[in-house]
Image (tube, rainbow, N blue to C red; front, top):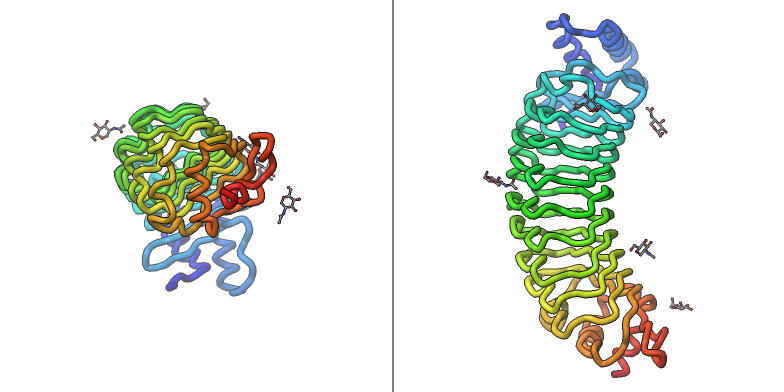
Length: 354
Ligand SMILES: *[C@@H]1O[C@H](CO)[C@@H](O)[C@H](O)[C@H]1NC(C)=O
Ligand SMILES: *[C@@H]1O[C@H](CO)[C@@H](O)[C@H](O)[C@H]1NC(C)=O
Ligand SMILES: *[C@@H]1O[C@H](CO)[C@@H](O)[C@H](O)[C@H]1NC(C)=O
Ligand SMILES: *[C@@H]1O[C@H](CO)[C@@H](O)[C@H](O)[C@H]1NC(C)=O
Ligand SMILES: *[C@@H]1O[C@H](CO)[C@@H](O)[C@H](O)[C@H]1NC(C)=O
């Protein structure tokens, strides 16, 4: 890969050229590391220093406990990880001298807030991972200088309210992960400018409804994760613009109603998970265009753990199931809850006897 480990020497030389702000403990650590690299190549890395790699693309710095987090980073740092420290605050100005930073990984800390200026020094940032922190809100304007950001991971935080403008400035975002937060609602227009978004993960929040126009901005979604929320209905509008959607995750909600045209726009769907909801019936026509005879739902579908009422209203679904049974997951957990005469029968057995 053209990467070379243990090139702390060039880092420490660079640091030594500007000794002004260098923490004495840090310079000793650097010196010790430098000596240990020089004298004993192949020894395990010093646990008190961050791992530093250099390549033609720039420097990578990975800090994990018990390493000391450096005050200053090489100016050509393109990748920085400061993870598993349980930090409640980041060292002040940690990004000040790294204008070329492209990836920033801060997972498994305890960050509760970020300053609105935090990302301004790193306009080339492409990946920001804040998984497993304690953020309860995003400051207004946080992303105003983040036009290059492609991947934003805010999984496992405590976000409960988002302002409509909180993602303002993100023009290149392709992957947004807001899973495992405490979101109950989303503001209309939240994603309005994210026209390049391909993957949206809103799973495992507390969402009861979604704004009907939520997905009107991003029209090229390929994966949509909505599982593990409290959604009760899927209306016609939400998915209508998503002609490229391949994978749709709706399991573990409270869906009792799916509107007849809810899946109408999905020309390329390969996978559909509706398991563990409250579906007892579905409208006629819902399945037209999904799976055979039109095309293959090539990665399968899951309708298990729903209280299906196996009466004449499911006739349309029964016909479709027979045509698509090869792609059906958990057939044995996809059973009729009613009427009494069919209770406990699998949907497929009932469909095949029709
Ligand atoms: C961070 O917190 C976790 C859980 O409380 C603990 O197991 C871990 O040792 C802590 N890490 C540090 C570096 O303090
Ligand atoms: C985060 O919040 C704490 C407590 O309210 C405050 O002292 C600190 O300055 C805040 N930090 C930032 C970066 O806004
Ligand atoms: C979308 O972008 C336009 C133009 O930059 C801006 O006026 C608008 O406020 C943005 N909307 C959101 C929700 O970010
Ligand atoms: C079904 O979904 C509920 C949330 O609606 C969840 O609590 C439960 O664990 C899920 N059951 C299974 C078997 O996954
Ligand atoms: C299907 O489920 C029933 C009842 O839950 C169980 O007794 C049976 O062993 C299962 N069959 C298969 C093939 O898994």
